[in-house]
Image 1 (cartoon, helix red, strand yellow):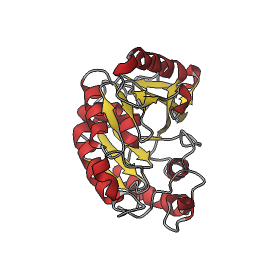
Image 2: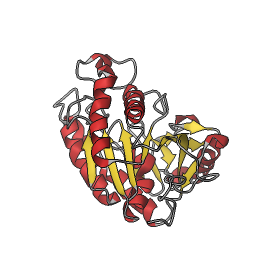
Image 3: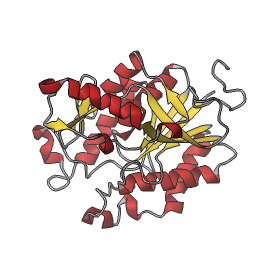
Length: 285
């Protein structure tokens, strides 16, 4: 059985970056496990009616986002989703350089070996052949994304008998440029304050660095959009475009891209994250 593990920093990261991939593998009968490292307590709330949840007011956003994540996973067909060390074990660290980074419970302050130990427990239980996480910069330098990378990579090092392939999320510059071109072509129809720049997209890489592409066209893209809508405190969705709290529109991508950093490559590019693993090639049962 194909078993895929994704390690993300906050609720909503998984739907934005891997929603179509998760939906596809879940529909194909693979076991898809999501481990989220924090509750996203420091997220900036978009809807005015939810503003009271914010960290500087009631500080209940994390609890609220547990429900959003559950709703998103239902849209993707993913039944195994967990929080690293249990819900609330590690707190959202906020953006790099903020005082929240120093909170004693912040994930940024976590001991990597200890946190990796929690993930190793999941790996030994679930036995995923493939693990997906961020690059060393966490895609865009957020401390929790960087820490998630460190913890995931360390856990993979400790379980080489189980994890056969490790991928980092990425997206090729040419695809992003094309997506923004479509967005600009909408002109005044864009219901956002403005349009983000290409370089605002996390995990941007040269096209040559992409080793795997999962086609999320059709139903998988619709599931991804629905999952992103479920994270309503953090994401505003309008058709094939979305915006975060900065209200700057950016394209939603149905095809999702990856960079293989550990394991045997099974194609050029691969169209299956399990390619190259004996007995788990596309079409194998």
